[in-house]
Image (tube, rainbow, N blue to C red; front, side):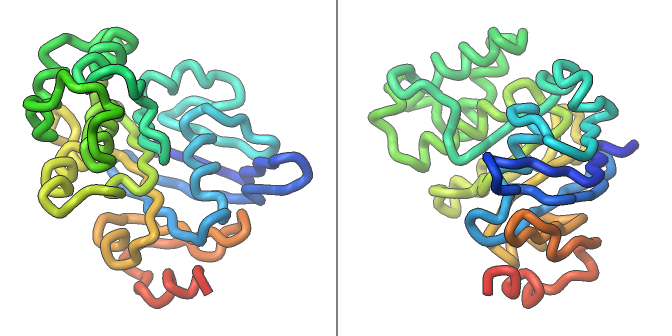
Length: 228
């Protein structure tokens, strides 16, 4: 099954095209890793796929649904981890996860399961504003996978995490609740690490496609070239 089908996607901010004629396809269970310098359009692409921004031209199908006509069919099936953690700083980790669990109709036991998985149970009652950025990132990962989404959209998922924390969250964002590989779109600045996770690579520069292909046919030097 095709999880993503993007054809001629255009998204503007005023007169500036943040994405210009971007096209790609991704099969269910595959990982697309998106590379490119700051301002290349990576985060905009994630926000379009998450239904937070509407395309100005082109067509986008996510998990079989056309985003222009039926975005509501997609929202509960997608998990987004952006630069902002989408968490309430005055609430605790447990309160944040409980809030999102209620939004998605997820059982309370899932909250505790994820707090344990990201090693945050001991600090779960403390307001997020008192926690380190790495701890907040762990809670944000837990929020993104709380409802076991069919598609994960991840913007630098390992940001602010030490090696031990990366080992905790990597299985959560890589494998779904049924044990199958998650379908993922990951924005990354790490050529080596990103290639290691990718099935398909997209390189953006100035909102345009500068590189697209199977990860097996791409080397790190091509990715580094996007930043020059």
